[in-house]
Image 1 (cartoon, rainbow, N blue to C red):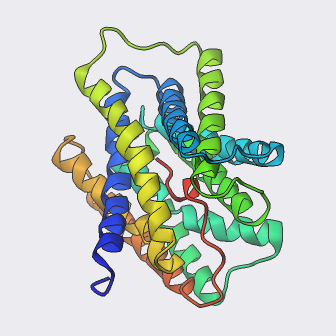
Image 2: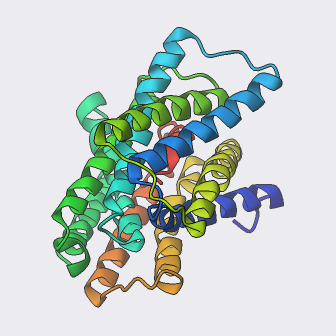
Length: 304
């Protein structure tokens, strides 16, 4: 990392910090904005801002096929992924949520094998086995064991996120660059708002100032800045380094949750976190070979 150009290093550090902080911001925004309403308005607003900016610069609209594929990926990633994460954070701390989500590379490897026959290598199976043990240890701790609904929601979120990421890599035809981003956010945001409407969600009045600030942070910094930084990183560094956010984000999320949010981590959960981080490092190192798969789409990089 010391050899990276300063702008690339700045973008990579931005991804580390911003995406590590979104779990904490979601928790604060839940005070006034229910989960699916919060995520739906977040991604719809970010998608409209990005789409409008791109159109002012003369970018072409996605084709019908690109809209369709972008909608499917957006619904899986942002609807089934991020929306369900926000739902889980009603009962699970932001720290434990971030650590649980760090196992998504394990699901990436398994989906790739089941759907496309690209089974993990020996090193990757080692990482998967270590990560599975860490998840079992984390799920049996007091923070998650007493919240079965939250645990199930996190598992569903990881499955949807990893499936959407794999499809965006190998199957879907997405609009190039930021326009593909915008189409995914617009479709995912619209889907989440429909889910929110069906659930009868409503903003909690009076609006809390911290919740409003958290929502604005998620739209501007979490979505627009974080996504742009990730796209830039993907174009400049190897996939293994670009995906290193997977084991850095949880550490930042835990630091924020414990330091600013008053969350508590037991010794058992701390050991589980360490095991999961080791598993993701093993997977990242295994993917560092020259023949590594194409990196996930920009939206496919972050689950919060």
